[in-house]
Structure formats: structure tokens, C-alpha cells
Image (cartoon, rainbow over all chains, first blue to last red; front, top):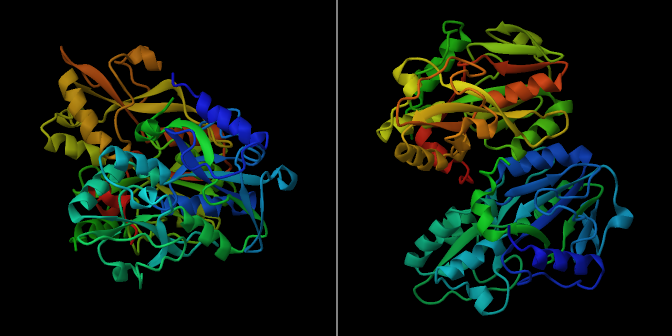
Length: 266
Length: 266
């Protein structure tokens, strides 16, 4: 049995309102997850969107309407209160951020928890590969591509990717390491030619700041958890909720357990 | 580009009514899939059941209400006519078999195509491992276990498994080979002790005939595509359709492509 206290104490602090900043680097070793909440009327289509697009939307757990507890990832947790910051969308517009969403929660809300690239960056570092944006204490550059996601109902839009620079040899190692982790975006979707996936300027990301690519390095692109947020905006749902960037749901799942998460039947 | 003619000709023969027997060993090299069709009102819950139980229900494609074409697995195919034999369930009772289901099709039907163990038996043989029931020209023994599936709405029930006997050393090889194929049930869920998963007599399968276990061999158990059929019976839907056992949907996907199916974004 793992010692789950770091994850549970962090969630308890968040629930008490004592921790409202981002979760980067906190409760190290525990999987952090992206959150998307939609009304039941849209839940089949969003679930199908995740099934069709597992690279940007690697689904870890779904919490059905009427429940707020991710019983597998974090028994006893409350999805309405245990993230430090949420974004609220109305009619396709981000209308504000909240430190809890109990006051706007509805019984027909369905919650989706998706794997996050935080969980593959430590394995990259453990294998001796630099993660440049962590070295620079910033975030990866994030780009909208010209690759359409596979649509499902109202949910459609371009694949969004994050970029990390590597030498070609390290790019292969990075592909092997992340390829073994399909629950957190898996292998890269492209390496080398930004224009081939519709990126005009690799030094001008759509989101976040550029991360420098050194001489002898190539840009390596991974499917990114920003994809569902962009898709959600375009779908113009009357009401939807996500985590705020970097303010993730901290689970009881150890990063090492991701390798067998899908294989577990008990 | 692969030569898809074998799969397409077989589906055309089936559609014309010229092939109504089982698809075992036909269009070799192409992935064959289990079919489950439910009304839209149950589709979210069944999709969620598959998401929660990927070992018995490895979902390859969902065809939405209003469509009958698995556009990714077999462009141009018609799910109502391109399987040789279907089972029809009304109120939780199997009421008959059909060679086509166009006459009872409804616009609100959603179709689920699931990976099938046929696709991992050839890789086992290619690695020099005997598949005993193929040697004996029969089917694997199939057993109901005491391991509950993760429920979703009306869909719940025990995990059903298939058994193949191996020496302990070959059991490890078989686990490695099938573990690399999560789209078709993945690694075994148990090896060695039938009683530990609620199987009283390994020589008395719940379905099909016993397959002999030789001296020095242990039984190896894989999650089985019969699980969703049993779950479907228990859910007592007013109307549902599946393939008839062994009468599968033959796709245009090559078995070798399964390894990268989930990783593909184009």
C-alpha cells in the first residue's frame, strides 16, 4: 500500500481554501489530471470525443451525473471543491474563474478526468533528458495544428500540441518513454517540421511563451490537454467547467501505477 | 497502401447473402470485431462501461445514431448487412438470429465495435506458442469469474474470461505478446489458480467445451468479449443486437496496424 498522505493532505488544504495557486511540483509522484465538466445532455458526445481522440484526451475516469467522487482515482474526493481553481464557460465564453464550484453545481453534471503531461515529464527527466521549459521554470509552448480531431456531435476542432526540443537521438528516446504512457498523451505526434502540421512559426506559440530550440535540436510535438478546452469553447455549451491552467486535480494514483492502470480489473 | 480486397470481397459476399457461416480463419490478417448495438438512450452508459472495462471491452469504433458506416475501420461498410449472422435481444432475452438486421434497424441505434481475441492468437502462433483450441479445431473454454466489472448505469456483471493452457515459461511469453495488444484484450488477467477468480472446475467451462491442460501446464485466463453479451442480457434492454458467436465484423484494419491504431491522429 502506498502512502497516500501527500495527495490527501494537498486536497484537504485545497478544500479548506488554504491552497489556491497552481499545483505544479506539488504532491510529487502523484498523477495530476485535467478536468472537464459538461451537462449530461452533452456527456455521450464528449465521452465519444475522448474515445476517438485518446492522444489529446486520455480519459482516466468519468464521474457520472449525481456523483462528485472520482471513486477510482481518489476515493472521498469532491470534484466541486478539491481543485484550487476552475474556469467557467457559458455559451462558449469563459465567464470567470472560481476557487470552488459547489454554488453552480447541477445534479446533471458529468465530470471527465484526463491524463496530463506532468506525468510524462518526470520519466523524461529520470531518463536523463532535459525538459527545457522546466529548466527555464516556465511552461511548454502550445500550438494549434492543422490536424482536425475526430469529431463527435458538437465537439470538433484542431489538435493542439505542446513542444519540447530535443536532439534527434533524444527525440527517439523521448518517443519510447512517452509511448509507453498512453494514459498521458503517449508518443509524440510529430517531430521536426512544424509547417507539416500547420505551425507557421515555432517561436510563436498559440499559448504560453516560446521555449528556445538550440543548435542541433528539433522540435518534438505531443498532443496536449488544451485540445478539449478549445473544443469545448467551439461547441458553445450553455454551461461547462474546467480546471484553470496548471490548477489540476491531484489524484491518489502514483505515476508508476499509470503503466498498469488500464490493465487492472480489480 | 495495403491490399484491402480480401476483407472487402468477404463483406460483399456477406452482404449479398452468399456467406452466412462463421468468419473464423477468413480474410486472414484483417482484424475482426465484436458488435454490440443499443438504442441511443443506453449509449452513454454502454460507452462508459467500455471505458471502465477496457480489458473485456476494448473499443475500436463507435458508429453514432443515424449512421451505419464504421468510417474508420471499414469505409463504405454497412453494419446492418455486413455481418453473416446477428443475435437479437428483447427485454433481456435472446429472441432469435438473423442474417441481416435492416428490417428492425432504428435511427436511434448506436453501434459499438470491440476488439476480438482472434487478433492475438496469430501473434501467439507466430511466436511459436501453440493455441491449443486451434490445434483441436475448436474454441477456447469460456468461464464466468467472481470479478465484478466496473458498473455503468444498467450495465454490470461478472468478468468473463477465456482460457488457454501454457507452461509457466510460455505463459510469460504469452503475457508479453498479448500485453502489447491492449486493443484486443491485452495481457492475461490471471494465471494458475482458477479458484482465485471463482472458477470451481477448469474442466467445466461456462460456455464452449473444455480444452485439455497437459502435465506441466497452467491455465492462463484472458478477459473475453463474451462479457458485454452477458452484461447486455442482465441489463434487460427493450431491444439490442450483437453479432452471433464467431460471426464477426471483418474490418479493413490489418492486424499489424492494431499496434498503432490508438496512436494515430490522422
